[in-house]
Image (tube, rainbow, N blue to C red):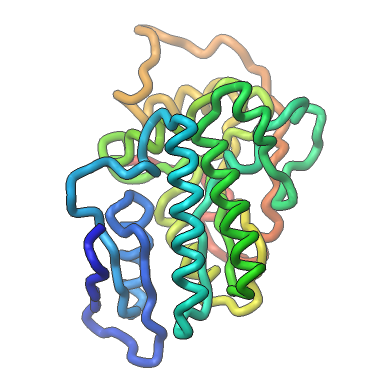
Length: 276
């Protein structure tokens, strides 16, 4: 990873703190960087320059890749703990760190207190979910031990401009077990602009704490799954002349009351994601 480079926008506000974005070469990282610059922040941005695929972006993680991601999370939090100027860490995690366990269909509410079961993830070979679960738990444990101010943003499947082309590995990794997520009412999507805005709000708001589930919409009908598949073409394809057959609506189990309070009044909250 290339050393941090300073990005300064026209009209930078000198009264705003400098922000570091790791890794701004990822799909979400780029949009967070863009959002920060538009608000007048000076940003130190780290980018991948060697052309290699990061362990975080592999479509099918092995147990080895899970370990690498956990170590990466620990290294970042430890580095922040040893830097006096760091005021807050906004840690980007995933809803997959909360939605995988036995009999989740029997639960009415799945919220920020929920965690994916590690043994269940291993049994079902849900390596992406396992990596997100273990790395976030490791980050939280170290942050509390080092008394670092940290919040996590647990996002749904990220959609946005050219996402199928620019973020294919992470997209397909997230969708491991998509059919089960859909049937259990926990398949959620989030617009990348909204996700970036939530990251910035979580950083700016001094009252934020703990985890925040971040999504715009829960996909729980057949029509919505078809729209999702179409938006992710050619990563996901439907059979020729496919038509919706069923009208079943699966119960929504995800809850994001904390996020609602954080972004109260935001126009895009609970609105469908539109991909261009």
